[in-house]
Length: 277
Length: 327
Image 1 (cartoon, chains in turn cyan, brown):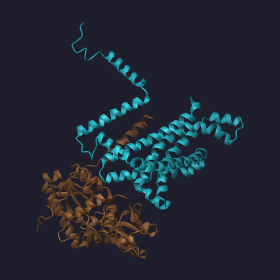
Image 2: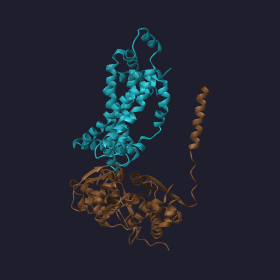
Image 3: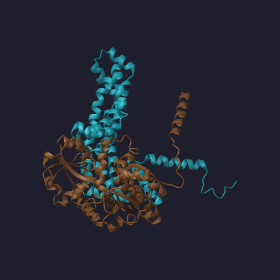
Image 4: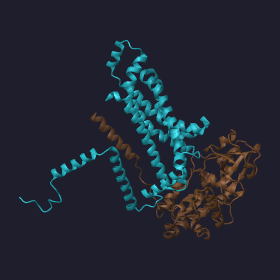
């Protein structure tokens, strides 16, 4: 039976399905960087299309080229780097403080039901307090604009990391504890040889979340205390001057910082958890 | 498990439906206008509350919804013609037009720029020149406070390098009282009232005494001006009536404000009285070209503006203010 006239344009489903699978297979074989680049180009194209179709003014939605031009401007005059370094200098200590405070507290809560009963309600309730409401007060309490911003970042990081630490420590199989006890291991040995390594994957997953949240935390701190430096300050000023293209540059920079931190933790994870593979 | 899922689903739907408020019916024939105010509900907005309460807006066929959102959001919404009107600070109009937002200032509400530098009397800061070498706290190096501060310095032959300025957030009162700052940049109708009510002896240097900058007023956009001039006219006329009534009887205006400002205590009456001094003018609502030129010059000096506007006069109009009031 002859094929209908449309056949060459619309191949039978199984063949099309196979071609699709081949294309997907080809995409999977591409190096990671190329896949990311392709997705980025698609994103830019969709964005440009949205600007054209929507007919938006640049102060509502700037085109990718406007943002790129603004990026070149603030990157070449050194503003972007200067403000980024200030924000990073708040993010890193915030992340570390949040993590290292959560670590012992998480251990205590995971191991002591009494401590959990005593402290957990307050910790959970504290998460209902909007950080933006207490950030201005932190400045007065701490009497340092810089450390109040770091503290805001640390507070934002603290809770998700804490939850992961508790979950990680509680995920250790009971039979492994029995084994350690049978081997007459000391509590320190149990922590070093069993609990910490076993909990590490979940702890690092929490740290990944914390890394991205620390960027938000530092920015919230800078919003409330817009000292004359930092990406938060630049963002406030850009909004004040209606420079939406600059707002986008800052948002992309923040995203890049968050991605870099995430990647750094992922790299650490790959190294320290090599034994898993 | 299945029951739990169904329960949660049903619960979510009920909560969601409960959250969906039905729109309040508009009074017959009135046009609903959402008005971005740029600040929280406050007796400073008494002229608008009075105009609403006494039916001046309704007489113009308008029903006003007071929207206490950020000033920059109000400008963007008016610039995008999503809203017809907003209350904003004058310098924001110039900055917005520099970025091609077609906003136009149609009524100057604050005739005096409301920024001031406040210090403890003991510090001996009585003139702008006394600020040289002093520690001055600003809410931030942006916004109306910063513009007013730089305007004050430049009008008095000082540069920013002459003063040790630092940004302290909106903690001016605490910073001054704890001697972290020798002087702080504030809104003249707010913090000085608070400080005096605490019994502090203070010196106040008003920016408006040295330079005439465009302060808060009403904006619209070019499309509304072209297509709906009667709307702008009606709104301005009603607001001016509310303003004159407030000036004539501040006590009554404050009482009306209680209906709009939750938990308004008597201590805030001083804020209204201080604000009134900034609103007075021979012709209410009138804006002057020289104010715009001075404001633009300050913004250029600060680097907030890359170049002068191609047509500064297009940023404002007195067309609606000079119309006769209805008797």
